[in-house]
Image (cartoon, rainbow, N blue to C red; front, side, top):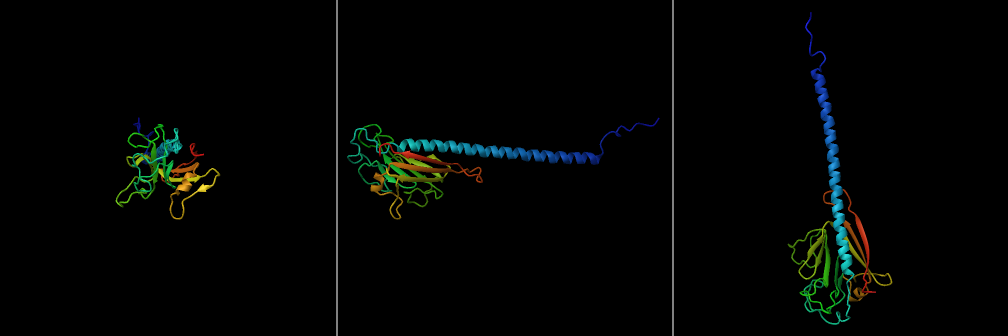
Length: 235
């Protein structure tokens, strides 16, 4: 009786190599698919985190600047500030208290008597004089005279007397437009981006436009936000 070939029902070496190659191709494609899903999820998560941070910044900015000109007693803006700690157009000089001290496309500096004390003292009256400023790709704030001084790019800052503090990063575009009670847009005169006192006194509405940037997914545009803010103490 002839011996039985136990390998007669198995695979040849060529068949094993072909099957292995196909398996490698399938696994490689599956890995690429998982990698695409992961990076897409990571990008969407980064966008969601950036948008949430922007919502907080918009809410804080909107709620605070509505206090510009707040004067429940009626005497807060009748005299000079007790202590000048926030620069006005980069110069610390004693000036009468004003509802809006500075206004430009990237800067909004305002005052409001929140606690009803009829004075503006940065040591005792917190958050009654606030200055917002957005720093773009240059990494330089308006009042940074030293060329070596660098700020975080694409970041909104807030100053209540102790210097600029970051509020929200990842803001690739920031712009403020100002309007009077007739809907007329107010702008700086000539090359000066800051509104003069007359125009500042006429502000009753601010249009805030911001756009997020996505550092993890630079190929994706961030979300744009627009908010119309009426200064309730100004109309």
